[in-house]
Image (tube, rainbow, N blue to C red; front, side):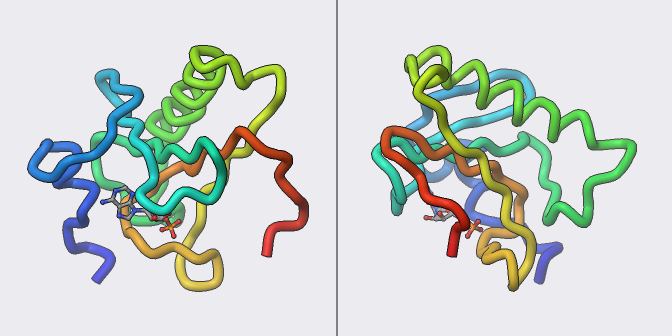
Length: 116
Ligand code: AMP
């Protein structure tokens, strides 16, 4: 199951539409279809890594690139001073539903802690 391609592969290849807000060689950022905050973007690596358990020495740079993209985007939209949250869910207890790692970027409202 976690080795299957996902809808995010189709977003990367532009086979299905998404509202893309960030793109570079390594990362794509697009609006979440079911936003949980006024600004809710998903940053994904352009290679498929199914879960955080599949991050290794060979692909860990992609995780750093997700953080870099999120920070750049926050500055670009002027939310870096107000603040924001990035979240990565892993497997069932983490609430992961799409098995291509993604960083949720949430901004535009006061976020509460702890999350549910
Ligand atoms: P997670 O539950 O952490 O795996 O997050 C998956 C996220 O992908 C959810 O927030 C969904 O709303 C979002 N999502 C699923 N399909 C699409 C899509 N086609 N375009 C944009 N976001 C999507």
